[in-house]
Image 1 (cartoon, rainbow, N blue to C red):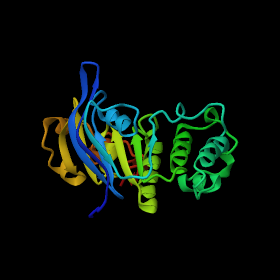
Image 2 (tube, one colour):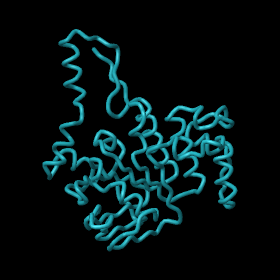
Image 3 (cartoon, rainbow, N blue to C red):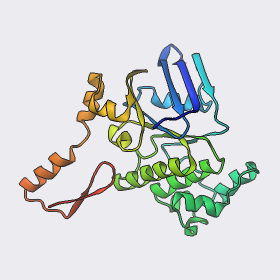
Image 4 (cartoon, rainbow, N blue to C red):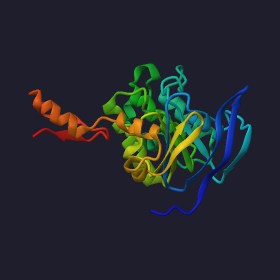
Length: 261
């Protein structure tokens, strides 16, 4: 697949917190309609990149060229990112009032993210983590963004809910022609969602390329260690059969169901 327009171009970006250099001169491009994953352990600098792109952090040096009309972010803590004193209706209506040119209604936003109107009068504390994350995504989409930055959007959710949210992001990308920057610490999360992947360690990219190439031919020991930590479904099935465990089905990393023979 070929993407034409560069929505965001990052050139030799460095970000410092005092004397500590969190991001040490990284460069990458996010193109129209693609999903780019940045993967790394906690403290690697990946979330700092996301925060810098939306203006929450200032770069020490380097350039960020943004050609998108609107960039929105979905945060890791879905419940904490929502106002606890506002219902879903109030949360979405507030954004729509500010963005007066938005062509979408509250009902349309709920439909897009797969929520029913039954949640409209609910508060964040009355909903599940997955529902809150869908509301957060709907709030971001109310601004009709070209680019959606998702910072660890599923790390606080159960595995089955993770798969649903990742599938939603994949569908939104195709339906709305969104460019998505997906931040994660787990390669299993980005494996079936991202077109390209950058693996980050201690402020630098140690691997970068098409997702299939990074997974099949990793260039760094760090990436190989991350891949080794991804559960092998086939091996797990064999072990369960040997142990006499005959569950009817299990969930794969991508959320699809695997039926046991």
